Image 1: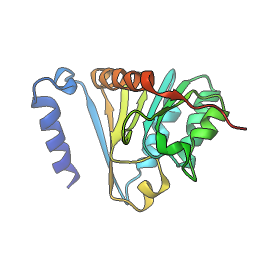
Image 2 (image 1 turned 90 degrees about the vertical axis):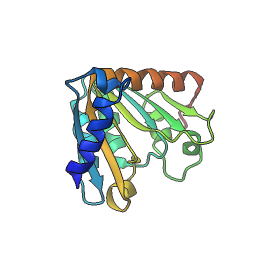
Image 3 (image 1 turned 180 degrees about the vertical axis):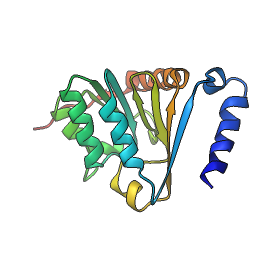
Amino acid sequence: MKRQYFWLLALFLFLVPGTAAGQDKNAAIDLCFTPGGTCTDRILNEINSARSEILVQAYSFTSAEIGKALINAHKRGVRVEAVLDKSQRTAKYSWATFLANMGVPTYIDSRHAIAHNKIIIIDSTTTITGSFNFTKAAQEKNAENLLVIRSKDIARAYRENWFNHRQHSEKYEARY
């Protein structure tokens, strides 16, 4: 079943004119599905290997493992920034406050009804995306998908989109 999804995605990305991957013949794509897959582990591996920059866009972000990995990356000198949905201001469990309190620039995108992105861009070369919210439920209970795409062209497009959203987002201030 996974191979079928890969070929459908490959057909779209590589054969449809105008897609970023259609221009990058060296793009590599790794897929993960939940429940049962190791999507959180794949995200952690990518975050832990980051050297210069991690940009996060998230609708729901409550995963302690992913949050801690982002803080550790920040502490080791990786530039980490997050743009989160406005629901993260009032969510019972959210990493918005913790990230901001740890010095990670955090922004709230309230321009849209829902800022429904689930994206992590690493070192301008790797893009993590899919339906997978950065939550424990996404890993353990939900039917989700995750793509890890290694392509400078795709990362460039997602980075540009990330900065467009950050531009209209409000800075989330630390709360001690």
